Length: 353
Image (spheres, rainbow, N blue to C red):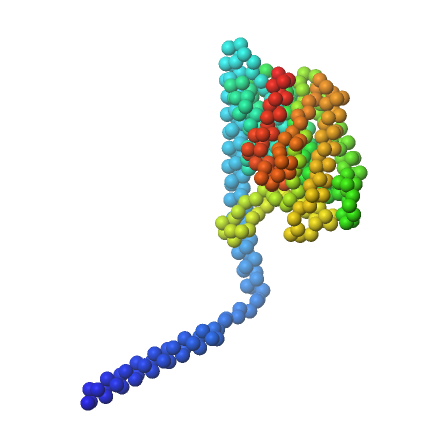
């Protein structure tokens, strides 16, 4: 009996402990304690300094990567020059032609995020038959293309001692559709059913005249010893897509825009759409209208200087027109689309040669 009483007391005690433990769990689940931290100047100062340190570290990494990228780019150019000298000598020994092209332009000639026109032209001609000295840079405007570097390259000639076969230009796209002044070409949307032409301001016509003057200066600079080849782009899509990159330290759905969007914000500012609304056909037609006017200006130059300037018709090459499946973002087609766009360029050059 004594043993049974002792066991009963132990069971009662353990049961009481379990019950009190359950109560503590319930209490803590019902009313969790949250520690409140007072916002003070030293706390904010510490957070600001930590953010600055992180920013500076990221900046240092960016500079290191940018330097690495530039070193690799210079090494690539040097290797291509040496290869051009070798193949030019081989061509001379075999008594066959070797072509030398100087390319100046924007991201349609040199796109760090993809394979642009010059890359595909190099592939079509082959290194054993042609040298492309490509000094194009993404984001460059036509105003920046008559640079000292371009003039020095033009005067010095190719590294193999031969003359330039032709000068290739990809210029005007950033002047027109870039985020520098695109909003200035648009009248505010008034809700009326006007044709696309009506919404293009006279400021664009003045800009087209300026670009025409720069092209004419370039034509005269090149002279009659060679010919300038330029293209009229294709019909871009103002849908808000930009050159993006994903940060592993941020939420996966967050994308950073390294360049662009270029046209969508201007249409939004001018009242053509509200944030989050889909792109309208009117906005796409306005971009088409602006680019067609640019192409008409280049066509006029070809008529005025038939022996010095040639227009490569790339507008309307990508079909369906303004199909998002053919474009990486607002201004840049996919690699496979650039390959299609390189074909009319290649055919125009081959006909000239």
